[in-house]
Image (tube, rainbow, N blue to C red):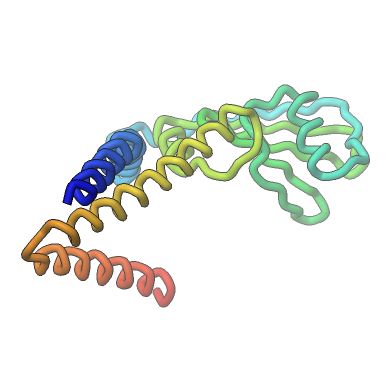
Length: 196
């Protein structure tokens, strides 16, 4: 019996610390998500982009090295996000929480055009909420690592909570009901995005 009590205390402590780890990220996602759903609270006008050209020969290097060289030589803030080709011109996009930068070369690959668009308040909130993927400056990878750890802590929080519920609650029908409602809602959301 003593062993059972000790195990319970251990599970309870793990459950508590997992909650402490996840609460900050849950609050962050709630706040930014709530603000994103109410864009009318913010000025929707976007600042005019700053467009400039500079003499620069396109480096004949691998894509990864090209992304890094463009960032360093053109002093671009943020990290590489995406590239695409349209009518023979390849565009390289970099993003930070405060701005978006797009770089492309002319047909001779000797002149680079840099388009810098500062985000408005709503754009910065959205960029922060949607931040994902490792890479770029160390602060970005550190933030993603913390999000992964918070996700793991949330999973541990749920599993330890279910364990305590199954072990010590006599009447389980209410918990089963909440679990069924949560699963049904999740399935409904998935099906909605798949078929509509």
